[in-house]
Length: 68
Image (cartoon, rainbow, N blue to C red):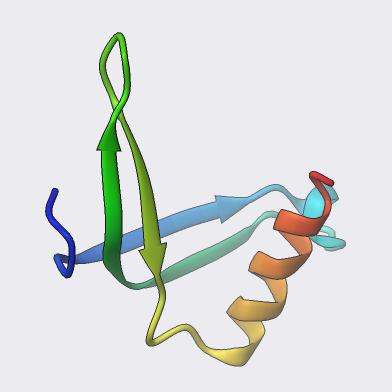
């Protein structure tokens, strides 16, 4: 997938990682900013979310920070 490719992104974030009683669903548009093939197959890809609403941004941030 090349840089600047627009993609539809659908995520289900686990409740316990975002501080909610239920899993949080996020549907948004993403833009690929970089993508590298991995040894053994698959890709490591960076995606920018230009249309992410404020609530979804807070949920995604909570999810990412819970892994630290």
